[in-house]
Image (cartoon, rainbow, N blue to C red):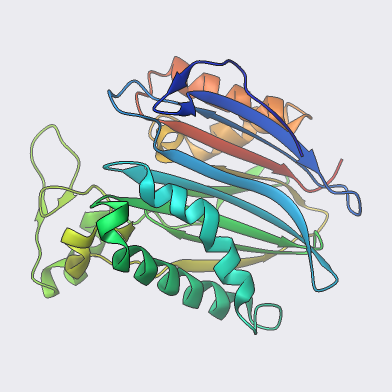
Length: 279
């Protein structure tokens, strides 16, 4: 993978802006990514994975955005361990969905058991596994999102896990959802998502099981966008697809999407991956 920083300002030990790209040598798949630190007064809390690997004779594209809160320890842990845990599941190739669900749970339990080291924070996640440029498996917890372009039409592949939409589960577990004027809905007045990794203090009122969605890649499928809510808070799905389709280089497309989110005054960390399935 060809990867480079777009500039060298370092915040909290990490570059505050990075981008890169890569490609398959077996299939016409190319990808690019771009990450920019937001305006909040804390270190960059977004992490990503974008790589193509060989696995049991198959080519896998592994793509993910991890959007942390209350620190970057949990998303950093996910970057290192989540895909590894998925691929350790013995039934991954015959049953990807079940393997992804099991690995999400295993990883969350490991994070909770290491909370003394990782802290009290947490992270959302959106992951995509592309198998031989034929089968796509997308999963998420939280509000990072995956959007597919099919003949130019934006298709949201994930579900935003917001407190109001999962209020019943939260209240049945003894929690509550606050809706203060001028603020988003929050679990127990704190967290703006209803599913997340980590967050030990809130875990009894949160879910960490992912929604998993398969998709067969055919001639109609053009590209996939994964991004944190720093982009989706200010940009509609179709607008993002329209921008990405106009730019053949997926790295340049990812950087353009981030730049547009900044122009729309997004203040959060912004992370974006664009995957093109064909030339």
